Figure 1 (cartoon, rainbow, N blue to C red):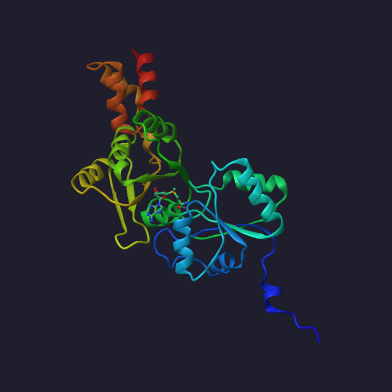
Figure 2 (cartoon, rainbow, N blue to C red):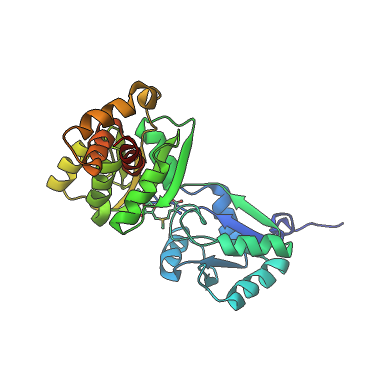
Length: 282
Ligand code: SAM
């Protein structure tokens, strides 16, 4: 009689397994992810302490290999060689790997090398924020972190101001008010949701105009991790305004730059584009 060991049936085929992990609530990990984390030969992770804690919470002992996209080519090749013959998991500190987290280079190289890849779905802060925000979700654009420098931050907002989709950005608590100030300058008429500490004890999702949110968070400095969700341009917005008439009226009393700022505040349109048009009208 031939007896198949059940281990034989459950042994994971070789390859890279992208495993999403909780973004706060440790219960948010799928059964399949736990199985894979238990069944692989090693786990590539950003921070061995962070992943070590999660695995110990799950009662899993695993070999951990530190990996991020700045890792040397050798480390990447080592992981790819391993994944050619064994099952290797890739996790980040929290959420879905590659989403503003390491993994892109590894997965790109794995595809080029013909290594099998499996992606296990799970938590990602952007999806939790989008679904909580009450803002349109039929079209959305996730743009990672807003830049740290003020000018670059405003440039990104101006660049995306015309995109007919809800915008999502990752943010940190110390930078929230600066980000809201930039949104207030570039997209003042948009509804914004600040989704904070998602899936954690002090989770909140606060909506308002950029101005209202600045007032709130200046008085109550936030803590924790944040996703900013910005409503798309109102459908009637650009057509409803006669931009030339507004600029011409403003130019009667203001310089082109001031006129552009005023009209930008009123319409939510890009100040730079309005400035160019104001100069043409002068
Ligand atoms: N890969 C992760 C994901 O799938 O969501 C994102 C990693 S990124 C380095 C970290 C950023 O994600 C934080 O600065 C914050 O903007 C957002 N984030 C992660 N966890 C969050 C949470 N529990 N609540 C709100 N935002 C969170």
